[in-house]
Image (cartoon, rainbow, N blue to C red):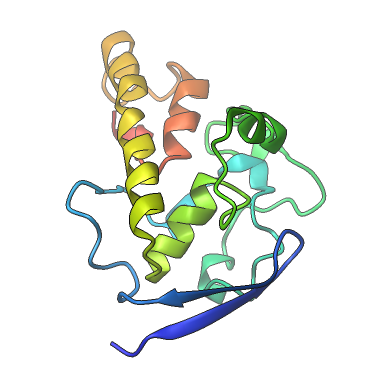
Amino acid sequence: MIKKTVIVNDKMQKNYRYTLTEPVGRNFNIEFKPELTPKQMLKMGVFGGKYMTDCGEEFPDDWYKNAKLSPEEHNPKLNYFGVKASKPLSYWLKKGWIYYQDPRGWFQWYCRYYMGRRLTLEDARQIARWKAMSRHIAQVKKNCKKGGIDCRPKQRQAVLHWAYDSRKI
């Protein structure tokens, strides 16, 4: 694979550069097995449609073709489960969960990882956070009938934000 450098110029980053070293959607860490691609997540409805609406130049056009987006404001009705299930960026910043290279958080990291960027330490940190969502999956399984998507919609939406297909739980 030929390495490719991506230059980002959006509302949150100017002249940020990173290198794609792996093929798109391949060669993931063996512990990281997302059930949904970024494109699928955007189409289903995540983050109230507000997430990364100004990043069209960084990611493939087809990710945005059927995406549920709201460039003006967060709109929970666009989420798959129609509920608000995320904290504001300010909350994540206070917790110290935002890595400076991915100022929008986990989903931005995942999109870049999916495209082929690898950052050894940050990848390990984000994959550990992704795995920690298993506690929410366990709660849905414990309290809901399989496929009962009306049960715990906020928790299901939160799980969906982490690339788990919560419709199948």
